Length: 201
Ligand SMILES: N[C@@H](CCC(=O)N[C@@H](CS)C(=O)NCC(=O)O)C(=O)O
Image (cartoon, rainbow, N blue to C red; front, side, top):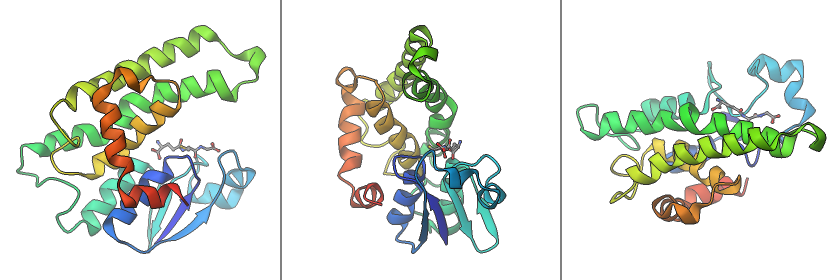
């Protein structure tokens, strides 16, 4: 199995889950913004020129949430997702898809307006709006986590996706001190050796 990876990116989610599953994988490492990710060779892997990309034999998957679903279905052996008949299953699906659906869009806008654009093209108004939307989306996670250790019962693949997005929110402007459940959750996730290993790649 081969993971196209960049540090500080969504590819950490995939490495983390691969580590949790105890699977062997090879890494092809890039840096975010790397020109090599825009090469014809890399675009043949992912036309969007983004990581993560996972190759497993003839299978190639390029969306981090889909990769998580693939890995759990193919190699989970009952781990990292509730049974379909479990009341936690719809909760699992909801939070597995929540990061890309609700959090990462505003986060991308915030990063564009505060880091990627040259200072003269940045808009404080757009940045503030993006931060507000990101914080609102995270507030729903904080509410959901009241009385829970993880998003859907035991630790699941949903935690590697939306949990990772929570960590990124803390890095990019959301004050986690105002979201005690998310702050404690992020600490809980950071204590997992599989995540620590992924963050060291
Ligand atoms: N929806 C995709 C988004 C992938 C994505 O945007 N990846 C970013 C890193 S987190 C990327 O590769 N950006 C290219 C670059 O910065 O050069 C997923 O969940 O995998």
